[in-house]
Length: 168
Ligand SMILES: Nc1ncnc2c1ncn2[C@@H]1O[C@H](COP(=O)(O)OP(=O)(O)OP(=O)(O)O)[C@@H](O)[C@H]1O
Image (cartoon, rainbow, N blue to C red; front, side, top):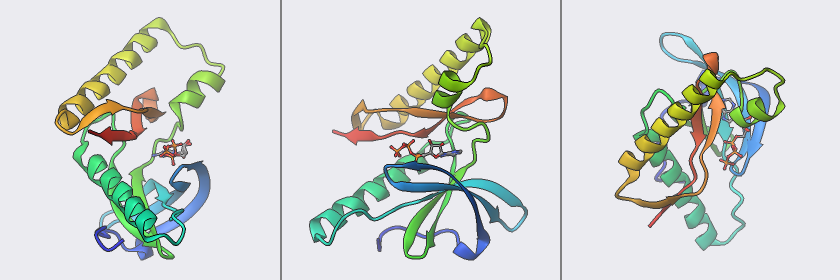
């Protein structure tokens, strides 16, 4: 993990409850003490699942680096911001903007609230804008999208937090 630049000291982070689990590892709600204020974040603790094989370790590090580089390129109001990278007991951690309404998938499938036609159209438009943004940012480097997942922040604004793209 030598190539990954650590930008935030773990002393600045206070880990709170676990909010989810993904293919990279566990995600916690956390508080980040910046110079100016305390910010609520989603802290993704990356688990090194590569066994002892050197080739696997190199591939794993490459994937993490690519994820970080991709996320750093994306600055868009509908894309969850990657604030920085830290280390927590030898694990790389990614500090993300916290989407306080959780997963859009869960919102759409599990919440009982009726979603009006206007809201649907608005959300679809926002999602289309995100896809266009990705296409512009990555046009030269990717051949296809695997998946794009969304969470919803306040006012139910869809925000992408996971991109899983493949390079050509
Ligand atoms: N920025 C965030 N704000 C709020 N909750 C989040 C945020 N990021 C992740 N989560 C929560 O953590 C869970 C796991 O997210 P994570 O991105 O690790 O996995 P994933 O969506 O399955 O994607 P992948 O494993 O492919 O990266 C999500 O389902 C969501 O509930």
